Length: 340
Image (cartoon, rainbow, N blue to C red; front, side, top):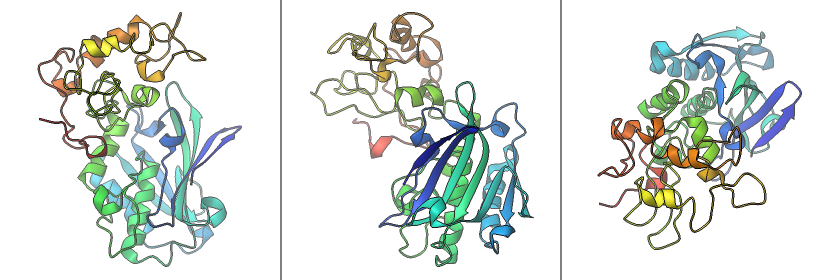
């Protein structure tokens, strides 16, 4: 269940773990075009968050604090989380809630309050609520659930797979045996560092905001658009790969990608509205004048940081002898493995 409610002072977004065959959670980024970030974690920030274990809402669960401190320990000196028990609101609050807060099937949920910044939404406060479904959980699952919700607070998305299959604390609760993870693993830690420190998480040359705008994943860079032989479809991972099926252009940037601006549908010269405009081709989002999709978007495939991405060690991607390679940590979308 996902709820997004506009408020006069900002935007409140709800993410929760709900009871089902697998508990289902949603991350704020799924509901918003712009990424949610703590100002504290930006380069100019102090990398420090204060959290409160709200004893006024009831007896504090012994699993809440240690779950946050596990994150603190594993993230190292780049991030610092300091907690206290009491009733004074801090940057983030962990507290008992109700089904009204989270929904009837939820174990816990996270509410995030944010305001609009230049190209992201600035988080000003986060509340984690634990519902009456939480106390019956086993101690390992309580710990895992608490660590999962803190993952949302610091920027991680959910993985829709069960926890063991996802190999992540952000996987889903299945309540079969013990959890595979009760604290974040190396991939989870790297994801937080990447999301908050490195603006191009997957190394394809496009920062996370640009990827959010065009609709590609900032955690994957190689993915076919469709089965070979079909009408060319864009990759869901690498923005430059607009013609991502077929051996000639799949996982590569070449003339086929430039040609997709014209055929089979003319994208060049279009803007949002009743036209052939598609944000997937708006690689340099918007335009100060004229049509949104223009020559600047085509040039993005060839020039600048997007044309010389880290995954090619700074070499030009257009016409490169090698195709894109899977990110060593995030791999590729939906288990896709590039054909040999």
